[in-house]
Image 1 (cartoon, rainbow, N blue to C red):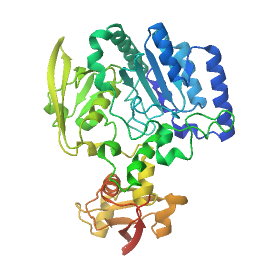
Image 2 (cartoon, rainbow, N blue to C red):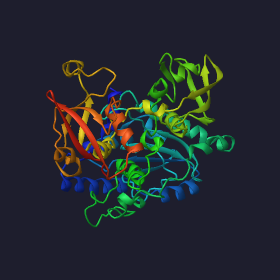
Image 3 (cartoon, one colour):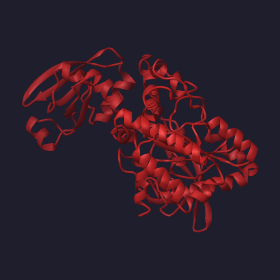
Image 4 (cartoon, rainbow, N blue to C red):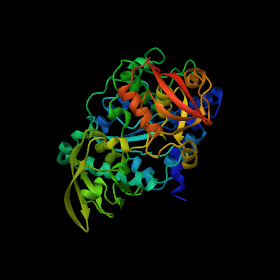
Length: 442
């Protein structure tokens, strides 16, 4: 039953958007009124939380989550009011619920923006103790997070806070380098649409900058300027599975499984190990592991780690090779829709079945992407207007015949293409070979 409660993280932007705007507006206003009346959570007031933490000496927990919908409100009742382990732990923190990213300090709060739930544990001086919140599937979360894991991360943050003077130097790398802009609304793609605050005097729902919009805007920051999208931006916060690790969502950063032949296996990591430190940083969760992986260079890198094994600490070294990030899966991410617009004119692509390949005599090592869906409206209808149809099989894109997956096609376009230019797309429609001109969109 406790594991099933992890579906509180499935209150994503997609679920929230199922309610009509007026209903959501009522929910947002009602949620704010309720939370502020109860007084346990500070509501959309991170600066106030830092001031209170300075006064009380308590650490801070900031929960970044989607604007309230029915599922979110249910989550908060279970998480805060009734959970017998988490509530007493939260009472030792200054607690903040941040339901929008408008005005958020991106130089401090750096996280995987394809989530609608992320947790930060901080000191009053803005030092980060750790992160919590992981996602590797569009709708399922059970394999990545749990309430047990959250409880243990909360306790670990309290332990670090208790020993702050001794551990402070090990926490410095938990804060990243400055972002392209200081807050989301300063990205060019968002600048004329949003402000630094929610508009409670007007349409509060439409005034909100959602987490995934930060990722979209960050990619567009490079693409519309005619620059390749960096691999770190295109493949952010690599899931531990990219290096061969399966971690236990009920523990801090404990290894359930290691894939044979993977980077993790070559490092000597074993099932049952608890990752105590990674790149010198104490590990509170899977999200902390992802933070270190995110910080590694796309062209290869090395990070030291210490694992606890059979009651003793063992030092190890993880090495990743050039292009390692590309093993990550982008298809579940909300921002993949932006890539489909840019690179494929709104098409959803999948690898053609082997029977289709054989019928068209396409070699197994040559591109064959089946057009599963074609968008109909706006920029996502570009492929349709260019003449492409569902059921087509793409065998060449801009003279490239080695783009074997949708992800490889997207990556090729946004790292080597130029917005506004047209790609020649060769397809089979039935057994007829056809050529179309498809714009790479801004």
